[in-house]
Image (cartoon, rainbow, N blue to C red):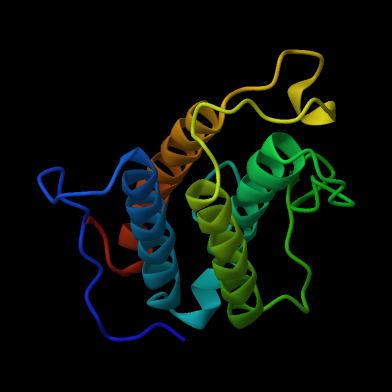
Length: 173
């Protein structure tokens, strides 16, 4: 359940202990903004697509959880995560009928806690572990992975703004 505290955009002028803290702030902001917007949608809109591509708000929440899993655990840490593409079925995003917003919110937040622990416990210049995530290329540094995660969240949050506007939900920052 989301609390009633407003989600505040991380100001570029707010002091930070370093780049790692900046990455954590932005990822937390994007993650909580996504969850706030999705939780404000009517229940019927969570599993309904308003776009030709066919994705739903619940699928987007699950997708972003798996994006973090793929880039941080499977990629950077080189862990065996079982099915890193567990957000997909038949070449598109998928949510099981039994998966709820509550379940997916908890999974995304738990993944975010793991991401934060990795960011705060690692040097941003360290390259990830070799493994299948990199598809034969040299592993990226944690900093490059985090820039990628930020763009994923920013892009998808913009997509969600359009869907929320069409559904009569909250939009913008």
